Length: 423
Image 1 (cartoon, rainbow, N blue to C red):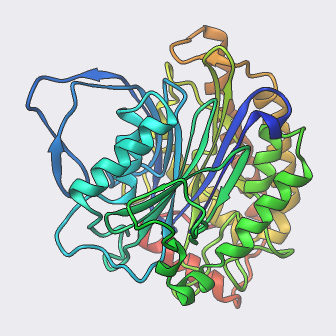
Image 2: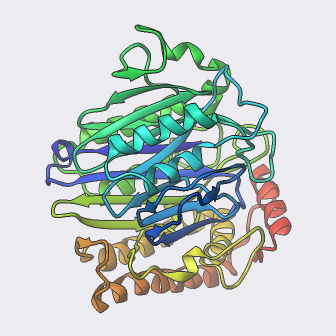
């Protein structure tokens, strides 16, 4: 499960465009935030993606990616030209090819590293889709989990929706704003497609799996939030969208929480393991914000600087490690979630303090900017947020975790499996 939105200048009211996405993955699948430099390559060099190799291009653009640690591809990212992409799993009647191919996260990264604008990125993905198809496990531990993909692809001028099944696609100019989740949104109203004229793309949907994914509720909630805040949408409003819960407490019932909390193996298998918000400003300037960890309702967004990334946000693998920002945050996240009602207010206070101190004053900047004041703001946001989380962890020691709640059994098992210390 995931949720992605793109918001143009007409809706923000400030002349900027904003992208936001929650990446929902398996609950202990570390998601890293990395800054990848531009590179030049020699002729006839090959590129190893997650499952297959394809010919490399002569040059690639610099990118900031949020990616599961084990994948070559990424869940979301932005490049130096101001192209931003997020993908969503689509559950369709069309299944992946038996032979390995590219998966959605590979296509996303390839679109970013090879494209200077949104339409160019869409063309890259379409061409690669036609040539290599979609094939390969998309789950970390669950190697039976696979899916088709939809994308929001945007730059400072356009927001594009691209939805795919197999090697086919439909593309639509989304206009002023768009929200996608885990369901097909384009029927016959596409602008370009590999299908016959007037073909209904929605016929490919698997209605049962799509229903239980809860995508319609999450998508409509994000659309309502954008319409309600039209003309005054900034990063803070997008943060709030990505922190939204359907009910008073998260992790219960259906998959309707935008801020997704895993609670078991059957209905709620996914956890928001990473979140990114990107502001595209005029004059080729950016502001990039990430949580660097799970559960944005328990995490502050921090500014991330492409030219001077917070290195520990890019460290992590399959088990708890003290040198990984994601895993250190995960120890806080799991312990806090087990006592959610008791720590929710403290977490909200810490988030407000960090974001007022570091997000609000962080200036729009060009991609290569590495002014010491920018570096200090970005890196201090990560370190101070972690200090606040450690303080909450200290308080948690005096709060007994409920032991009869089914999700408590689930999360304690996850913690034991990955070596996360439980208080």
